[in-house]
Amino acid sequence: MREGVHEGEPERLDRALARAFPELSRARVQDLIRDGRAEVDGAAAASASAKVRPGARLALRVPPPAPAAPEPEDIPLAIVHEDDDLIVIDKPAGLVVHPAAGHETGTLVNALVAHCGESLSGIGGVRRPGIVHRLDKDTSGLLVVAKNDRAHKALSAQFADHGRTGPLEREYLALVWGVPSRRHGTIETEIGRAPHNREKMAVLPAGRGGRVAITHFEIEAVYGDPQAPIASLVRCALETGRTHQIRVHMAHLGHPLMGDGLYGAGFRTKAKRLGEAARAALDALSRQALHATILGFAHPASGEALHFESPPPEDLARLIAALEAEGATA
Image (cartoon, rainbow, N blue to C red; front, side, top):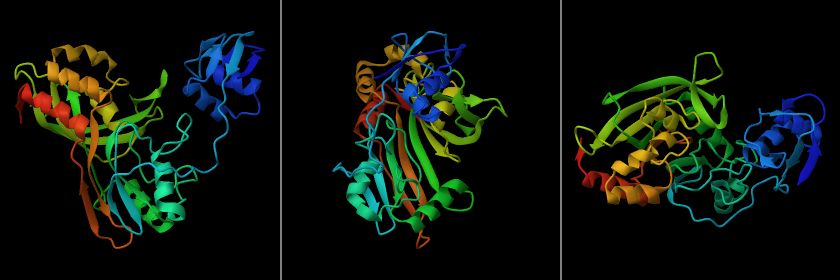
């Protein structure tokens, strides 16, 4: 634990901590604040932008330094396809993709380093070798990783192009509260960090620092009373790949993902309208109901169009089945 006292005028917490502990960069301090490792006057600090008064007691819990490169770890992988250039993984919910503050070990990268050895591409950075795209920790489904530099460059170019000139496909299945007003449509907004909660992303007004995000959606099934449906199964196709994009866009429509405590906290009481089996399945899910079900791209060496599909995993399939038992319409 590093401790100090803020001297001088009122100041943002991240600046005050960086000044009190000059051996740490401000970016590192911000990461530690986000991980809940900062305290002001003995209380956990919630925001890097919070003002600190003169004389405030500051404390920072800095974890021991992590190795520069991820260590290999024997973590089982669900391998859908593998060749000399790439590997396609069906990622389970709960597995973090690459090491970061608070998740230094036990990640997909640690497993890949053990599985692929020295062939794993380093273009993505020493902490993200081979990673071309990622899924949130609690999102399950298909993900491709490059095994060499050539493959990494070619796959990264396809993802940057968003499938405009090639066969890139990324489709997700999402269970959402309620039913969107249109059976299908496109959501196009700008997404960036939420101004008052740095852990969240948000739809921002044009020109306020967001990046264009485009999601195409189509309703696959509607559950519950036809006059007042409780939920729906929505297929989402990404044209861009922003952080939390589907979760933010569906919440923006007024239909956040079931189980999403970050973007759908105000919808928790709706669980009371579910039948006993569906309520139990939602409790057991304990994550956002989102699964990367289709992934397609051109092979970086041969140019062959590859297409992979993954059915919903057991926890999500159980919730879908329980909702269907309460009544479903196409």
